[in-house]
Image 1 (tube, helix red, strand yellow):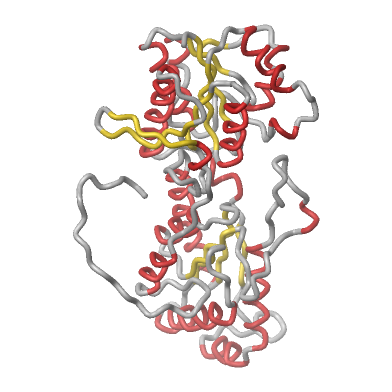
Image 2 (spheres, rainbow, N blue to C red; image 1 turned 90 degrees about the vertical axis):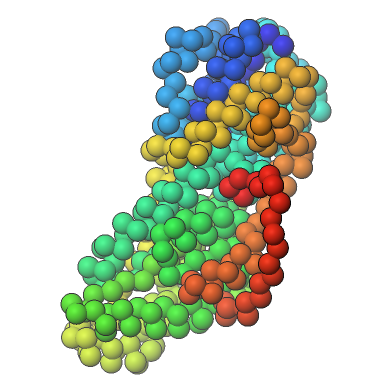
Length: 401
């Protein structure tokens, strides 16, 4: 193992530059050369047509800042198996041979991981640095902590405008069919309600919780000001199990439906209930806010931060984990392993699992939700009766998860 290629793929997020830098630094220390293969799997497929690659020598490594989100290596949403070229794997091998690249460090999520499994089966040596802000892999994944922190910050900040205008604020965030970032970001933002795919949303229950808490805050305020914050994951379902999908949004390059409209739908459902609730008009009159035909009910506003939750700066945790992941992947390749995913560094042990196991989707623990329901957070359902067992932990204790 003398020459290593680094690829980042799928969605961008915090910590990826740390993966690139960690891989390059470890390769240099182990007497190897490390090259950037630009633009994800599109770059890998077209590698045979490149005239040259950027080698991450020490002076070039210095230019890669580990903290900023995004990736020095670039991305594309391309799935190799979907490329129609019947000779695609041989084309990739020819490109790797052209630049004498012996193995690949590839950072990405479940879709990227599925390609790693595919490439490995076709004799292309590659290892996986887990990356997805959705946090839905079996391992911790680069980008999750950074995104959760940004969601929490946006949620906390938006309370200022919400309270100024006495509005209900709904923030829709990424996550597809796992609600980890909405859940954790919402808890950190002190959200009043968190809607996630794991719990079908009963909007009647959500409405009653919102109405009680929102009106109480305004009535108890000496300046009659209050707000109510809801964090919504894009992949939520209603109480009937219906998925909230914008059918006009199409599918992405990996064949997934583009989820859209969960935040808008939540606003519509709450607004409908506000309009038909006569006690709300009485509340507006009681608090001196009511204006006939103009301002009869509180406003419900949607905010969609979109890609703002995956850009900017990385959290310190993601930079640390990213460097460990990138560097450890180089060591895994040096060891002769392929088709495996880095898990963590434990002392002087590099822990890993098969990538096909790592990419199995992991959902939010429903029992953990019940814990926060005891603290008054609404999850769009009637709170379950709490039941806790107690067990003494044993060392070592897993981090983060």
